Length: 351
Image 1 (spheres, rainbow, N blue to C red):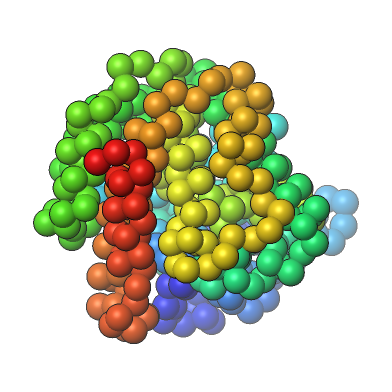
Image 2 (cartoon, one colour):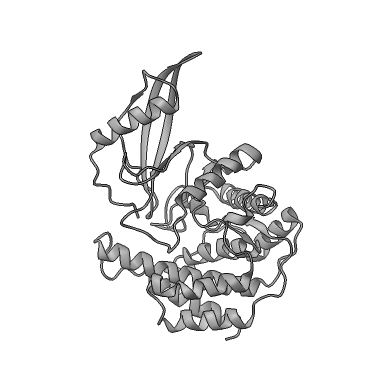
C-alpha cells in the first residue's frame, strides 16, 4: 500500500529544483512533474521526478527517486532514516552489491517537511506484495524457468550481503545489538509500541525465543533486515538493485534467511494463495544460500520463530496505522493472517 501524499506538487518541484541544482552544480537544471510510483512503501514517502541539465559533455537526463522520511506513518520505534542511506552509499562505493546510487541526503526538514534522500532510479520490475506476486503480476505471468532463475538470483544477492563484514565497512557500532538474546529482549520491549503486547501467540513466541536462544552463530554478518522479493528490482531474472535498508543490522545471517522464507510463505500459504510453481522450495533455497555463503545454517527453527514473531508484531502496527487513516478497510486481514501463520510456525517447531 502506498503512503497518501497530500503535498503540493508544484511547491515540491520548486523546492527540489533549487536543492538539486546545487547538488549537481547545474544552474540550468529543470524538473518534470513530481509523481508517486504506483507501487511504493508504506512508511517513507516516495516521489519520482525526471531531471535535465547541461553537463560538461552535453545534455544530461536522469530519473530520480526522492524518499522523504516518515512523519505520520512511523512503523518502528527507532527510526534510522539517515543510517539506511549511509549504508546504501557505502555498499555502492565499496562493494559489488547492486544498489541504487545515492545522490544526496538532506537532514533539514525545512525544505520538504522532513529529511529526505535522493536516489538514482533503477529500471526494472519489482514483485508486488499487494496483491501478492503469487496471485498476479509479472512474476506470476512469467514462465517457470524465469521464475526459478529470479528466485535463485535473489538468494544469491541475500548470500552476498551475508558475506560482507559490517566491521570492515565501519558499520558495526551503528547497527544495534548483534547478540540474539539482546535482539529478543529488544523486540519484547517494543511490543507495546507495535500494539500487540497482549497477543497470546506473540507472547508464546517470545517465551520460546527466550528459552531457545542459540549460544553461538559464528561471525556477525551484515543483515539486510527486510529480506524479501518485494525489495528487489529485477532486470529479467537478474537482480538490478537491492532496496530498503531501514531494518539493516548485524548478527546471525539466518535471521535474514528465515525472514526471506517466512515472507514468501506469508504471501502464499499465509493468505490462502497457491505458491507459484517453479519457485525453489525451502530445502533448495537453504542449500543454495549455504553454498554461496560457505556457512551451514544454524538454529534455523529459532530464526523461523523470530521471523514469525517479528512479522506479526510489525503487522499489528501497520494494520492500526492503515485502518486508522482510512487507507484500508476496517477488516483488513494482514495482522490476523500473520498471527495465524505464527501459530502454525510455533506448532511446527513443537510448542
